[in-house]
Image 1: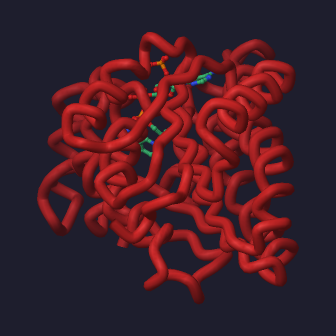
Image 2: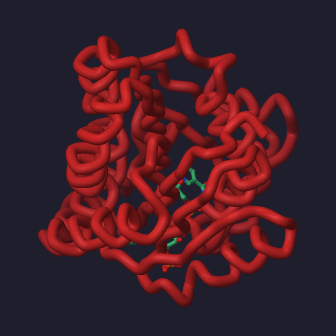
Amino acid sequence: MSLEWKVALVTGASRGIGRAIALQLAQDGATVACAATKAENAQGTVEAILSGGGKAHAFGVNVGDLSSVDQLVKDVASSVGEPSIVVNNAGITRDGLLMRMSDEDWNAVIQTNLSSIFYLARALTRPMMKARWGRVINVSSVIGIHGGAGQANYAAAKSGIIGFSKSLAKELGPRNITCNVVAPGFIETDMTADLTEDMRAFCVDKCPLGRLGAPEDIAGVVSFLTSDSASFITGQVIEVDGGLFL
Ligand code: NAP
């Protein structure tokens, strides 16, 4: 229970990777603010945490919209307390080849996956600076490191997260706030549900560990990064992909 008395905000906590992270941080003792596009979408995660004896609350937000994020930050602070841990996990894909990529698909992916992190980090690190303790964990992707055909928007956003996080690590380190990036490979969630059988077989075949990842594989790394054992780790990008890109 290393996180007892700490409040953690996890975005995209209704399902997939975010849900697993929320469950794990609650198990570590944190009170978890579980955010999704609608509070009711995150309610299942909250109930799972409460039934396990943990503490959690559900919130609705559009992470790509500044006023919605500002409202979330106020709501969390007034009903749960100031978060000292934030896991920026919410994300979307709008894949398409460059020649056919619409402005809308570009903007939606950049706003939801990248601008969201700027909005949330700017608002949430102020109280962390005062408290001289904080953990910012941003969920990128192996695509942000290695690129992906048909994913120029997603790769740009996920790569942007890395530069942003390294800069925050330098800026906030003197206040004892660490900022790290977790870059998942292919993980079994709704986001990868429509991978073709051929693509799935290719990933499994190419992966030294011979499987797609589970959301819990990411949650374990996030949990470690919030712990005291990781207090001297900042500005790092941890690829959690079963060795897929070795
Ligand atoms: P997922 O199953 O599709 O879940 C996405 C989550 O983000 C949901 O909780 C969704 O909320 C939330 N969300 C989406 N748009 C939002 C918005 N505008 N405002 C607030 N919340 C929003 O995704 P996942 O596979 O767990 O992925 C989680 C993160 O890992 C993403 O950043 C993704 O890019 C990254 N990632 C995933 C993989 C993978 O293989 N799955 C690989 C690399 C990186 P609702 O339920 O309310 O819609």
